[in-house]
Amino acid sequence: MADGDLLVHAYGLLPAGERRVLPAAGLAGSQVTVEPADDLAIVISQVSRDRFGAEQWERHGEDPAWLGVVAREHHDVLQWLIGQGDVLPLRLPSMYGDVDSLRRTVTGREAELHRALERLHGCIEIAVKAYGAAVEEPAPARRPASGRDYLLRRSAASRARDDARDRRHASVGEIYERLGAASVAAVSNRPQDRALTRRPEPMLLNAAYLVPRDGAAGFMEVVDELTGRHRDEGIVLEASGPWPPYNFAVASEMEPGR
Amino acid sequence: VTDIYPSPRGGQVGAPPQQLADVLERVLDKGIVIAGDIQVRLLDIELLTIKIRLLVASVDRAREMGIDWWEKDAFVSSLARGEESSDGTSAAELDRRLKELEHRVAAGDGSGDGSARPVQAEADDGRR
Image 1 (spheres, helix red, strand yellow):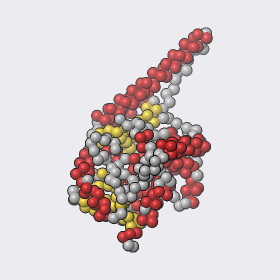
Image 2: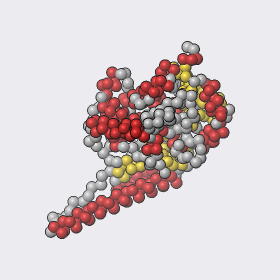
Image 3: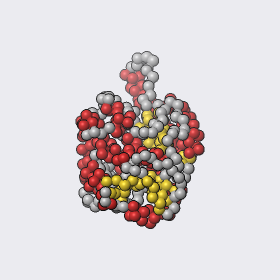
Image 4: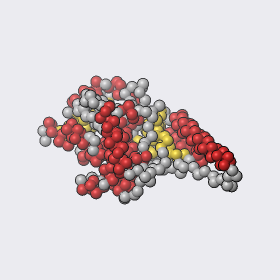
């Protein structure tokens, strides 16, 4: 196949000179290789222009079936790499005309990208989500004695609900801060919609934490402790990981989460 | 790749493979951007994920297309098993929201200047 028929897809950046076992396949079953670029190494695949050219992205970029597969395959390579060491993930779409063009782009920003990788050194990402489960209200002990009694009760119940909600919001803030203190960096993203989580309870927190590999167990102990402490308030904590540090792959220190 | 830390008691650790929604949220909206040769505009992540739900609501169609990634995905495979949405969100409701979002995207991005992610600001709301 002539070079014109191929594009370069870049997954992420590694520190130069590190030995890594590469995954067996990347995008659309392509071979995964590493290209040196000064103090960095770029993990790439050569893929067919017919399948991944700009036209295909324009045509299928809004199609979850197409994009879902590409996203998964891109992610799977990064997930494999983070299992072995540092990696700076690249955002999709990440396509280049050829290796030289990609290398020029990377070396042009080498210092900045190297710093971004340095900030992630030895770290993984752990996602923590909090959900607000329904808390049962105690049933009234007796029937209301009068209309006034009934109204007082209703307003007291409403106040209690508001208080519980405020407490829960305060608790979620505390959880975010507490886990932030147990990590290198923290990002709070917009909670996912119920249409997406497919859960009846609302998502209250959608956070990501940058955690040293050897500190992950300690971080999870804090998650456990907070899970126990806030269970009675109806807060359910769920952690997942290790993730490649997507949320902390930023070119500038001034833009956390970008 | 192995899990390197224990799961929290009472919670669940989504050991890889992670849920598709979380993967999409990250690979399309996070990660470093080094301007590629190929500039492509992508859909707003919320729009996309709602589209995913609509898509997998008719899994037979996906199967006809030879798509099977949802079989690995807890989020999607629960849909594939035909479970009723516990929050009562119907396909019609999703469809309405999708149209509303698409309208918003169209309204907020009439310039056609080729910049990626037209409603990026929306996704930044929850950040600290």
